[in-house]
Length: 378
Picture 1 (cartoon, rainbow, N blue to C red):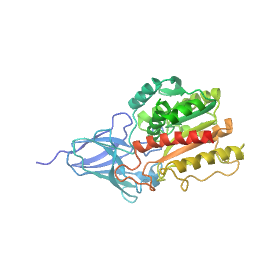
Picture 2 (picture 1 turned 60 degrees about the vertical axis):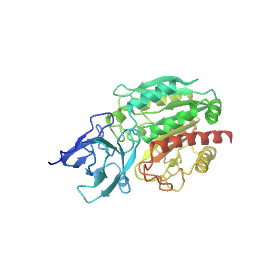
Picture 3 (picture 1 turned 120 degrees about the horizontal axis):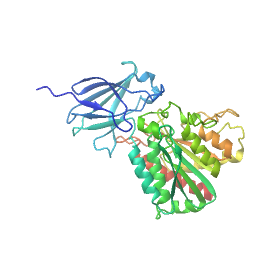
Picture 4 (picture 1 turned 90 degrees about the horizontal axis):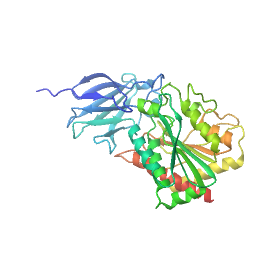
């Protein structure tokens, strides 16, 4: 008897796939574009009727995706229990069907979930907010609402004079950023962690684990529900287009900012790196020295960080003030930075089973907090 066709669906939180054709254990698929936008790269779907079958899943049309350079050398994330995320062998052919990523995997059970990176659900976000808000000395506030009405959650704690802002997922498909938040918050709120205890004495923290909840739930890569890239809105956010940024920036204006980290993921570069604020109009050597010193400390503290690969540096006066790192450095004189983690793997320290993973993202969050304490002490 002929085996039934596999079943594919994505009608769930952060789900994204379009089924073009299914034949047996093979499927031809396409990634849906971000809401009201032409960006696309994030995918997340479930395959059923899969037990013991050699799946061949072809994601087509990828030459037109947001970052075509992200597909060569990339292996899709896969899970059968939605807890442990490994990697499925994948290959990219730019000449097949408008650019095709072929994912091959043989599940043990009937179900397997595939995603661009291990998803961080809105439900897990609620759990993170709830558990952290119960920690000693932590208070929670809603800075504002997204276009779809979801809360922009902020966790505040610490008694020190330094105002530190940590925020993530302006680009919602970069889910490693909220896994990083789990590690950072675990360090900062664990009463037995000496790094967290010392940092809470030095600093007052304001932590926004998800700055773009609508895009996260809708399965977007880069935009909110209006098709707006939030990290190009910081010079002039509006209630109509970017209420998320408007709310966060207003809260920052109320507290001031001494140190800020905007947490992201990069599709193409197989490394962890920092981007700074070079090129802002008010650039000075002391502020730049603070950034360079933090980068050097992090490079020494963890082999998962490096300084050779990264983004080009803006020339004098050419920084884009619509991006949060540049805006905060210019607006407050802050030492601000963008942290980037890979969708692929850290090629200096590869993990064949998981690539870059939720666990490594969380560990990097802890390492970044330890580096912050050393930076402050120095």
